[in-house]
Image (cartoon, rainbow, N blue to C red; front, side):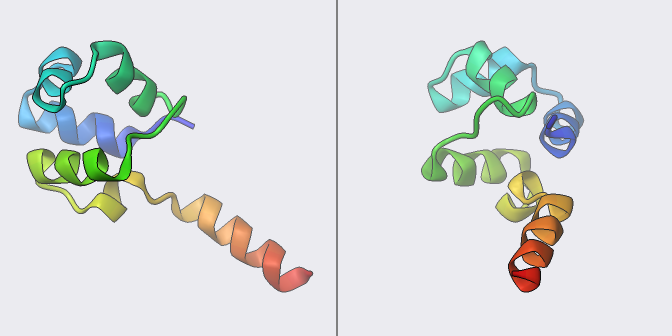
Length: 77
């Protein structure tokens, strides 16, 4: 699932994927993978991203729909 919050936050700050990747020591492909939901950054890098983009790490990487789905499944069991 695409991480639209991460994409919007990056664009709002005026960074390209390549610029953001460079700040964190990653490749543009890694940032693209995070934005496209292929992978997620390591915890320390997620916090670095949240600082750079001035957004809470939970806002950037927490998906309410998935959490609700997981919680409802657990309760039903």
